[in-house]
Length: 316
Image (cartoon, rainbow, N blue to C red; front, side, top):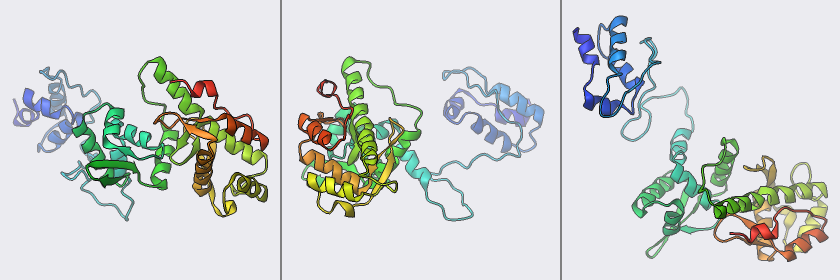
């Protein structure tokens, strides 16, 4: 057998090491072998189909064009060993941190705007404490999560409005929700979250979108998303001081695919309705419900109907 082909053939142990590399690993070995012909590469590709204890490694679409370089592999520090023609934000490193399903789920839990303990996140993610601790260390190092330590306790929260906006925006472009436990209780909780929830520190879901659209319709929010004189009068009557000084902005809702109110005004409005007892949280989740008093107060301002059914909200 030609030396070039012999170098391309691998034993079972090497196949095991290269399962995660796949066709790129095979292509790299071929290019490192000088003088390899097209025929040799074809033989080598067939050799990659050798059965082993790891199963068959199938490489049916392996390119034989050695002029196409592979993407440089990440070094020991997880960063690509390559340069670019200009300084660019290192989006890839943050995306890699959020790309893990368990870490993404923890970030979603923290989007209720509250502070969680590591123990609570361990229960939520259904993982062991050491594993959760490692995940949290990565989220903190990436600047996605802030940590506050008090004695033996470790408290976690989303690291600011910008991070919360990124997480919510990723939910908008996501192809759909992740799989949840197939039970009646979880199904009801999912309905609650869609009916009304907090998106970090402002209202989202059908309640948040409905409230925002009715504030626009009643002339309390202008086309530029800033509070009008009528809106300032309304929120002042509810107890918000200097309402017109708080900037507002739209935030695309991840479930309704319509905008809800965000920015400083959205945060102040959310806090106000909680403080007034017009909206209550459902357990420790992001889901919220509108209280009877809240329904009455909003209706008196012409803000009705708002979809947060009391019977649904009290379920689960």
